[in-house]
Length: 434
Image (tube, rainbow, N blue to C red; front, side, top):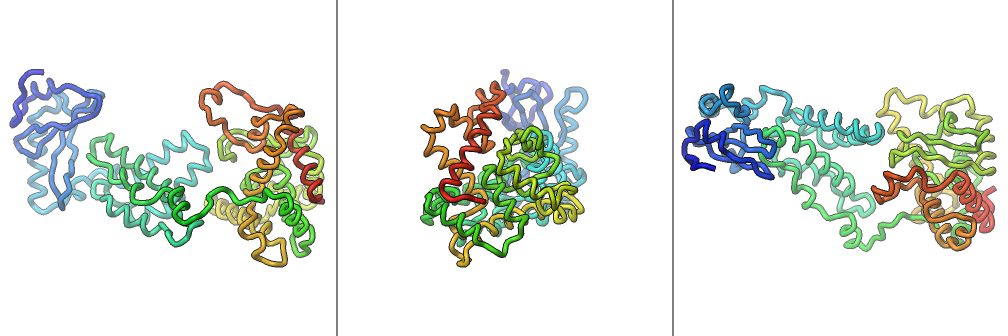
């Protein structure tokens, strides 16, 4: 590259600026605040660099296009902008002429991208999180004026260090991830130079370190001792004051090894009695993959009984509560309420209300299923039931991306049916559910 004037670049000097593997900024001069970003893709964009409250900010102008938008035009616009600032206008006023860079509008762009990549349920969850925690303070603010300390103030208000099991560190982690991606949109447009969310997560401990510091075992709570499984089932059967629908839902949940959300939102349209299958569409699965649960005879018995009471409704359990929802947000609140109700019903089977509170959860029965299957892996191997069959029954995604891209199925329906039948019979040897 030829010698380039450091004080007063011309069009020919801009043209000679080479691209690198990462973008960099170069002083153009005259006025001294005029700079140019050189991007790896070859695009060169002018900007005005100013200092505000000890922070360096960049106000984007236009892309350098020789004969269309030259150094001369950039100098003209930079001078005009600096005069506006000198007259008392603030950056937000100047940059706010384009609402594109209001936080809420960049968040909308981010959500639109996520909806192309994620399931509807997951994208809706992202939107609810942003609406609850971020939009109230930042929605109508230009992103160039948002500081890291402003974001940290909000996150500190979410963190609950005094509550080990409800610290909200997972929520904070997700929010930091969303914020990073939202601000990156403005960075890619050269609208801002730095991402105020980039180092936010480092202000909080990881969930693992937080649990370790508080001497808390983060593994899922679940019954794995057979004597406790026996005792819980006895308490469950002895519980008189429980709705019949809840009792059937609990039995089906335990025997199917499903996630709680998929049990409480089960629909009759998913049940195929003729082929003895329960097919949950990918849109409702955590991993975004269709999940097929082979129905064993005890599960069919439960469903046939429930059909007598809700067979004409869309949902299998508590249809009226779901049908009362007016929109997706209300439906999500009801779903979470039903998941909590399932957990509470399982924990409240004993006369002593606290007996199972720290030992049983709805999700924990998946741990019970996994543990019993692992302990009996040698016996199951003789039935042609491998670890892959167990993982398929739990609807876990193969962690190896290459293997996952090639495999159509890890287990057959009959292998999964055999495993669930074995599991139901094994629980009966401990203590019959019926």
